[in-house]
View 1 (cartoon, helix red, strand yellow):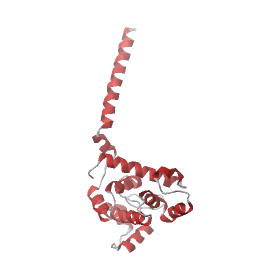
View 2 (cartoon, rainbow, N blue to C red):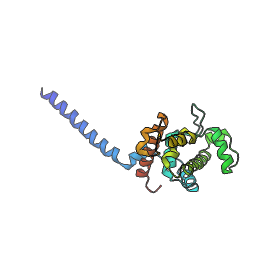
View 3 (cartoon, one colour):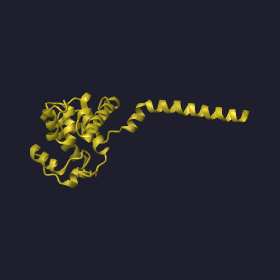
View 4 (tube, rainbow, N blue to C red):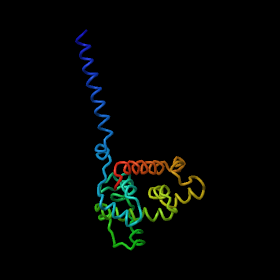
Amino acid sequence: MKRKRAKWRRRFFLLAVVTIVGFLFLKSDMVGKWLYPIHYQNDIRASASNYGLEPHLVAAVIRAESNFQTGRESHKGALGLMQLMPTTADWVVEKAGFESVDEEMLKHRADVSIEMGSWYLSSLKEQFDQNVYAAVAAYNAGPGNVRKWLDEGRWDGKLETSDDIPFGETRRYVQKVNYYYNKYKELYPGF
């Protein structure tokens, strides 16, 4: 009986130590940065600065879209880090006056995807009177859908009412981008 109690006490003690160490470890910024890294920081900072965006927001969109993995292609055909549709990329090239960009560049070159995606996000922010949440929703669902929701009063463009967004995917997307944005601001305040 004493042997069982001693064994149980050792296990309990070990579990308590592991729990405390794990808790302290998970609270550290080092672990936070390991769980929420920001790759391509220089490209993100440059593009965000070029188009009047917060770099934390651009990083959050990238995290939500591709988790910083180049070469990604969605089941709908969106490409690259910032998951732009080829037709949207063509429109961005035309409107922004960028040099021609082919699908391989958009898909595999982080700098190209970040530049084009940032320009597009900035243009959406402008379309929606600097409303970041509406711009993020439009990045996912398209500006036509978001304009319709706002005009019809189905959503008011606020984060607090994002549960009113008619498309479940877009609702979750806006909430996810906001979560990553806040996490990045907390972990990378000088970014």
